[in-house]
Length: 273
Image 1: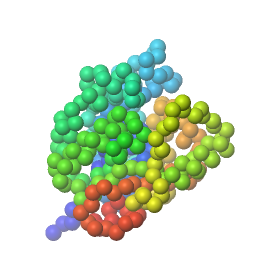
Image 2: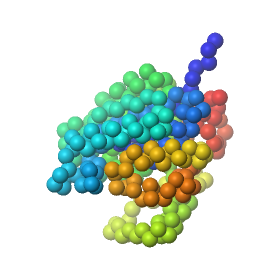
Image 3: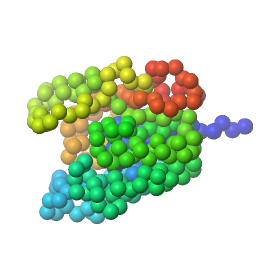
Image 4: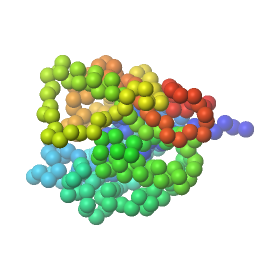
């Protein structure tokens, strides 16, 4: 009997999300012979246009941004050795509260059950052992991230196929280190007018710590393909070595498990191999 290849599916909201929070695990597990599948839910039309032009500003052409970001996404997948890229093609909803949230065809307005059926079809096709997506707040409250969480959890329930499901997160200690590095680089930011929910989790609440430092170069290269998006520029300015130091440990919360693998764990496939 031929042993079946293990499969990892990452479900993300926009082009470039795959590189920041899961670029390391996508590269690592591809190198280990795992079949990697990336599902990107939106077309990224609310991202920056050429030259950093913002949505709604003169010169921002959503159709051109979509084409540019699709090309960047494909280049990122090549850098990470992703085996299969699937795009659901919903319109990027923009940040919470933007008028684009409610436009017809936006991911945010799409019925969860409808989008979950499409994702469930992909889960049945690829039969992933492990699925990774965001937590219920989409990590930082972006409507498309929240919607990606909702449809992923609904699709998992519809199919009952993945042995393990994880939500991405960041340890609070990493945010402290990030703040120190920003200070060293002379980067300052204004405090928000209203209190913001605290991002990430205390270290002791994180179930899974995956060391991806050996693949930091690939993760850096993947993010570099998305250099049109100004929020990525800071990370690229770190350079490969500092970037890997800061971003080389990818962390998750395990929310579904049929393997009884003990926690904490250092492998998304613990209990499966």
